[in-house]
Length: 72
Image (tube, rainbow, N blue to C red; front, top):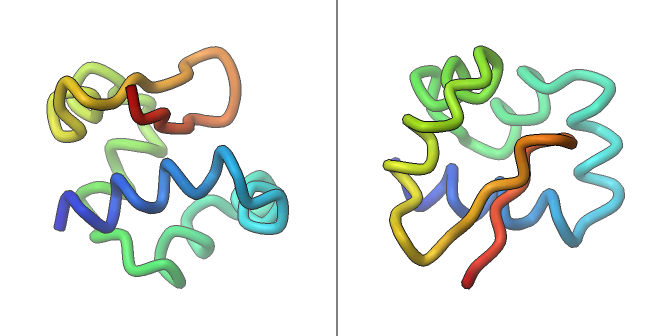
């Protein structure tokens, strides 16, 4: 579900513990959060344009760090 991915990426920008867990093991962290396998693959493969399309115009993503979503 896109809402889970959106919430996860948004939370990465504010939750230091989640961000550190993601840095250590992205796949496990996303799985524990409930991010679908398809969405995990997009994140792990750095498919930024596809992720942006899923998030929509209300969000920007940071591409030069750990991927995070910011509500506009």
